[in-house]
Image (cartoon, rainbow, N blue to C red; front, side, top):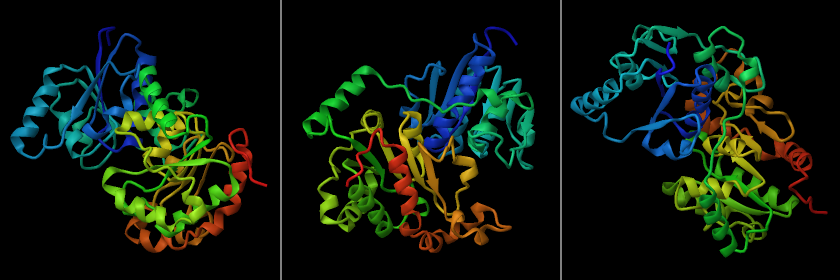
Length: 363
């Protein structure tokens, strides 16, 4: 290894995965400060790592790059021309298997899978139980760099880096809506898919509870194609609750959303990318897990105070005996019906009280 080492990190998944995998970039810089680090992500997630100090160059995999053999071949050729010394594949799917294999890099590291291990020069087996409060999603990524060496002191929450101009523009948007100096809570109203979304009737009860017990104003987070669902959720909320929801203040793109989120004191709702972004911006977070998602993997730095969550497993542990979480994905709709908000109202109250630096509990 030389000081001019050139490294590619690959993570072509969702926002939370891309954000957490920036820790791989940071670990590389920590190990080899003179290394040049490139980060390959999907087009719809690149904004999340814009301005990150550990990323020297961002490479983007765009829709259509793998629609045809020729298109994908041309993309791999571009990667090969970069002459990387090392590749760390934190994605580990067919696309990144092939990108890694044909990259020309002498060292290629990823997770062990029986059908793809041969694409790499080194593989690790994912740990199944977390050793720290960071959670498996972070721990297994750090092990790509540190392998069996002690990495426990290296764990940290991923960070998002905003430009001053971006924050100033979001502040103007909040001021125009009369919210600049209000106490704000972001609601992760909808998950990235139906299987990761608490039923709207249940989410409406959660939102009603937040407004009933706190003097706050609410912003909604949802994807552009989910606008109709967001409207349905809004209409399911009580009339008094709706007076505190500001759905028009959403941001024109992901970077503006991040700047708006940075002005909130907490984020509450469906576990996913928005929750992870909130953690990265040092917000108090209350996550509602999909029944088939493993909280041990994504319960990043949960402390029962500032960072809290609920999961069906806490109330129906027998469902999970001898069954892997992902095996329950096809039953998510039925399982969600068992995660009634009344089960975790007391947890919400504890969350409000534990974070009273941002909350005024209504008397």
